[in-house]
Image 1 (cartoon, one colour):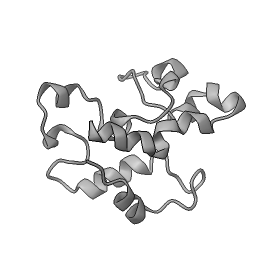
Image 2 (cartoon, helix red, strand yellow):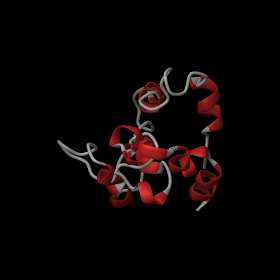
Image 3 (cartoon, one colour):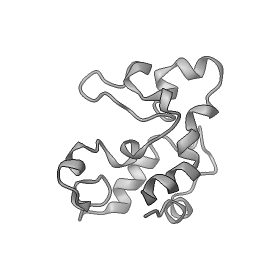
Image 4 (spheres, one colour):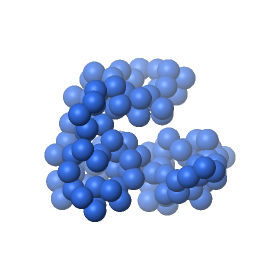
Length: 118
């Protein structure tokens, strides 16, 4: 699909490669570099809760778990593409990893333009 081809060229696809040393084994670091695989009350506390072996940040990291979309493919059940302020939702999702501490040069508007994909 076009989305997958676009993603493979984006830095999110290889985000795990940017983690070096002990950071690659810390869930607090991996959470921004890999896609969460387990959800729920205690999920996200262990590296095993993330698909780190895949190598990067996949669609579900930004758009939410894909089960609802697969069952009923429409824009309304993808995070950030609903009817209420999609830019606000996207900003909250992006800035959960792209923080001033870890990504001081990150800016929402240029990244939204760059992130437009099929």
